Image 1: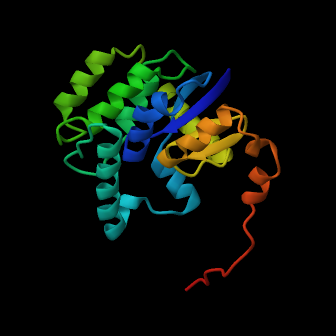
Image 2 (image 1 turned 30 degrees about the horizontal axis):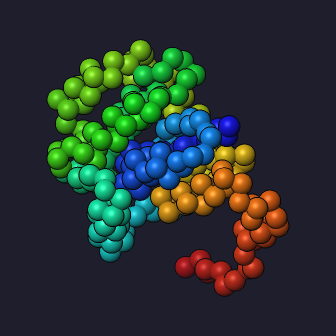
Length: 216
């Protein structure tokens, strides 16, 4: 049985769609999942990269694309009232639902994702909605506790140190599979596709150097 680390931030519609699709995509595989909340903005800052919602033409395409992907996989997707939003309260709530040093279970992560992406277009940070979500999840720790905040920073830092640059990223056996569209590749690995045992995995990840961007 393989142990997977599913790095996520509920701000990402691709992470939401991958979360919903994961059981079907990996049907027949033997695995356990550790759901690891990370701050996507922290990954972007470290790698000096803008998120798709921060580039207006890319933003428009992203939401058209995820609407199509949700339609194709049969997943309800309702864009929240504003995006991007501050995901820190949700990420900290996820960790607060587990004992110190623990991780949220799938039920908790599902509730967070659906709060954002099945909320009928309501604001994610609406005080009443957040209070109702917190009451429903009944965290065992205070989400605002310094220990919870430190755990989220540590998980984000660990993901960066491992080379994670975006969400969703699934890590298994030291290999990383990024994005909703990588789920078939992940399934092939778990099913023992011999491609992963040969030189192709390492060789394909070393692109020959090309033209570099000159500083302005």
